[in-house]
Image (cartoon, rainbow, N blue to C red; front, side):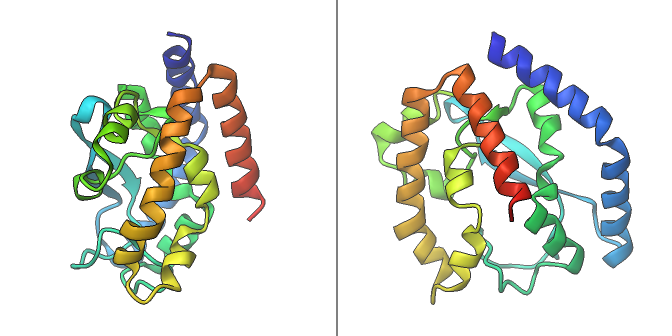
Length: 195
C-alpha cells in the first residue's frame, strides 16, 4: 500500500510539475513531421495482462524490429534527443497513475520477448507491476548503442541482452523493498544526469 500511494503521489506531482515541459516536447514532435505526439504499444503487465504503454513518439512509423539501435533510421531528430535524455518515458507517469505500472519494477516487454523468458522466471517477474525503471534499466542505460554494434540487433537482444535482463528482473522481484526502490530511483536520476 505504501508503494502504491508513493507511486500515485509522485506520478500526480510529476505530471503537474512537468506539464510545461510535456507541452514543449509535444509541440516539437508535432512540428518536426506532423505525426502523432504519443506512441502507444501493447506490453505485458502484472499477471500477464496486456496494457498499452505511453511514450513520446521518437520514431517515424515504419516497419522494423521491436528493438531499436542507435543506427535505426526510423528515429527522428527530436526523438534522438528524447531517447538520450529519457524524456520520451515521461508519459508513463500517466500509466503509473492508472495503476498499470509502478515507478520501480521490471520493465514491461512486448509479448514476443516475454515468450522467450523461462516459465519460472516469467511468472515471478509478472507477479509485480512493471516499472518505469529498475536495475536492468540502469545496467542497460546505453542498450541501443550496444545493439548498434551487433550484426543482427534483434537476435543479439534475444540471445544476449534479454537473458541478462531476466536475471536482473528476477533478482529485483526477490529482493524488492520500499527503501530499495528509493535507491533505484536515485541511481536512475544519477545515471540519466550523468550521461
